[in-house]
Image (cartoon, rainbow, N blue to C red; front, side):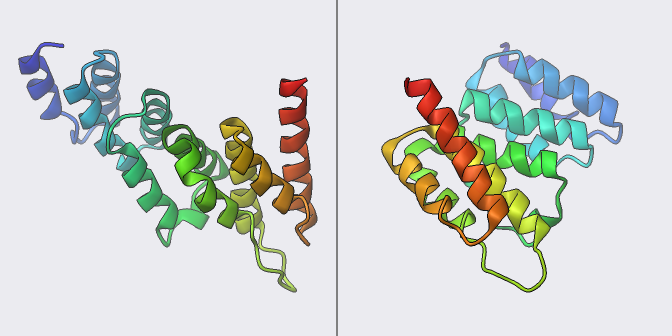
Length: 173
């Protein structure tokens, strides 16, 4: 991409209109330029849900430098559990694809939901997303984390880990 175009587009990345921001995102995303890719990082905090989702997906696919640290910061934020399931799933999936083997311990931790008298649906959702991400990583340590999760006291997590392990077996067969 032309460096001047990237600079001009960057000025509109925080425009008031989500449609303008969306057009800027798509233009930057299609350039295949490392400088343009860096500008995509700011879209993960866009006020528009679809812009955020597009940015998170793209960062995960492109493995943009700096994306992993930003995504991990989002995962560790206080408001992560309050995000919609789709957004949590995309963030965790992007963490898995950008971090690979290095994030297995973090994802393993998400499978460890403490038992509670009251069902913690949000923590279960997050654990299920982590199981899917571990399945996609597919390494020996990811499989070990899933086997550990399949022994969870939490039925939902156990089932998600079992399903991920079955999918890995099917891929290797």
